[in-house]
Image (cartoon, rainbow, N blue to C red):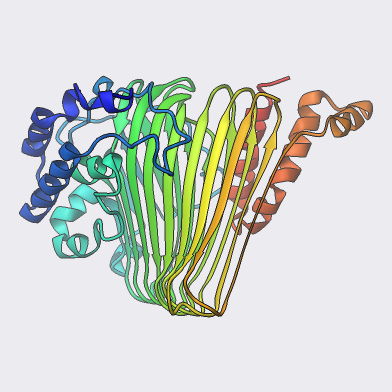
Length: 441
């Protein structure tokens, strides 16, 4: 039996007794409790991901032990954690939600938006206050049978964040979500964003630990649901401590003539496995996804992305870039899927990797699965080492090695920065990258 399979034994507070205790302390409506029970039954019957499966064959879970972690209960008192925030500098926001170890601790929203019917706050609270709305959309995109982490998240999500924007309501200022984690903590939060027809919003989400070397576990889910002619800009910065295990399923459904601009940046965690899928479900849907990864030490980040075209006349554009230091590793596996009848599809994906160390490794696996005739789908990938001649040239003009590397890295990421329409986000990501570079000679 493999080391991964051995982890089925001794699940600690995520075992049946822990789940029953978790459920007993919840204040959930009946339909939600039933859904949790069904998902946990799936969790019990599954093994941990098979290292021979395509999504996991390049991932090493042998160091992961779920029994080391316990889940925070909604009824337990949570306090604000002193974890860093990066995306708020110079930004005027319309509302904010903060959580500690997966439990929401504060909620704010402009009164003018409340008057228009906007909902923004704790997913647990709103599942009780707006049960019909939450029941209609929750876990409609994430399948609990996808793998054991998906089943655990559906069964034991501790709290999370709900944004609901009614028809034709435009939120001009960004909304901010900050998730923080204590040393050795866990976060099983879920994000649900619903934009009705013609609605517009910008969501800034960031995750950070109390200490840079903090440990813990994140097992999260994200569902973005865009109605016809809606427009969502979503930015996510993952900056957990360097010993956090990060597992996430991220899904988006883009309706007719709707536009999704989705930026994901990953700087933290010891190990991350993210499955991201965007579905264009009606004609005219458009999605633009930007990915930024910056790794160091022995970090291992894996992103499996799918851009699925379910309808004709849709556009998807995925661009992922990673910079690697030390003995770190990134894996990007991208797939464009075009369903039968999804003609006039325009799909593009690209992954570029820059390695600052001879010991770093980047795996890039683009793919196409096309069942329609009249389409335009392309993909590309590049991987290379930093050019020492460029560093020498910069140093000969008075720059330090760190400054030279920062210029090269910034230039490498510039294509993604140019695609980000929010100036404060561009600046925040630039500063985060500079912090990473400055730690190394």
